[in-house]
Length: 120
Ligand SMILES: [Fe+2]
Image (cartoon, rainbow, N blue to C red; front, top):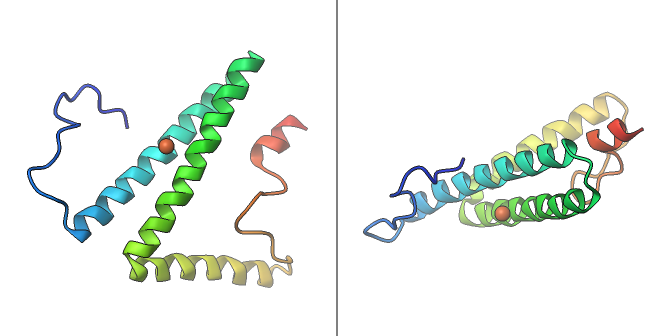
């Protein structure tokens, strides 16, 4: 979501954001973080330089932490939306139960990732 081509992109609005506008801004910030994760990860996968891989992977993972911070902020600002997030999490838990799969950690460090499967 690079907006460097728009010279007005960084201009502050003439007023403070309402709570609803702030919530929308946080959603947009989350999109930006997800796009950054996607791009850094693509760069990591597309090169062999070990130093660049390590630095960019570290930056990518910092962006993941930013998503977590912004999602937490969004839940605090909009408890109603937080209920919807919880509904979705519970739906997946129910599907896991239907498949007789013992619950995997939904937060924290995953045991296996798509990247780890590619490496094997
Ligand atoms: Fe970030």
